[in-house]
Amino acid sequence: MFPNQGGIFVRWRLSGLPSTLRAHALLLAVGTAMASLSSQAAVLLPGTRVVFDGSRSDVSLTLGNDGPAERVTAWVDEGDANQPPETSKAPFAVTPPVVRVEANSQRSMRIARLSTARLPIDRESMFWLNVRGIAEGAKTPAPGDSQMAVTIRSRIKLFYRPQGLAGDPAQAPAALRWRWQQGQSDSAATLVVENPTPWHVSLNALRGQGQDLVDQLQAGTIAPQSEARLQLRGISLSPGQALSLEGAWIDDQGTVHPLQVSAQAAH
Image (tube, rainbow, N blue to C red; front, side, top):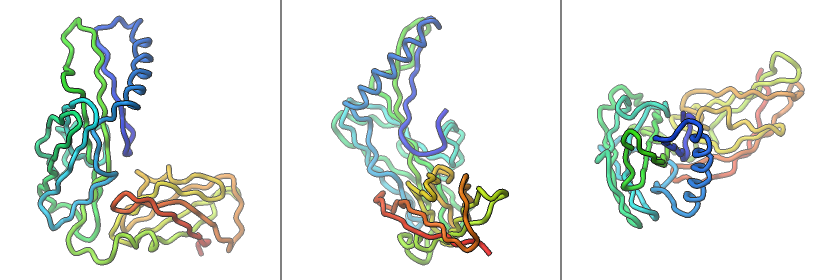
């Protein structure tokens, strides 16, 4: 099972081994694969996100590979990291869907827009681009064979940005509205973050009253024209007291910027 967030995931396939040996083999596989990953990078994506301009029919994606040749499969999903590629209903197609990326080389793929008529035209929509690589020569083992295959999958956000959105997405973090509400007890509070803009705001850190809060955000993101509610535990805030918060947000290019805000008590 993959978590519903971005990152790099590793999957091992062990076959042809007695069950009593699989646990030992898996431990060995973990150590071997982690050592291998540290010395032989997987296929590399050009950034941490893709912004799809709604005025275009497709965008280009360049994959780099500074390790052995790999067979790469790519697809777009709607948010379920465990959904098989063939069942995805995301309105995008990656072409070609499977490519061979030679060792120490680059290869381009294209993300084509299909019908986006069902998507909102007044705000961004978020999807996920998946890129899965397996070393060239690895194959599904025949019955009775013993084989370990390591599959490396990267998953990054894809933002579809309709034409005609007014404003600058780089100003969206400053437009967020922050307030806090008293919880059901004196030692709990709810932080409410409202995003009135048409852009997604991605945070990679948010901290208040000594508590890390960013993990409470779905995919670390505050969706456009919506609000997020985050729980603060074991604190005591007085009516009218401001709640100081600090963190960081990520722009279209993947650059991280500091964030310092103050949440006022809700009235």
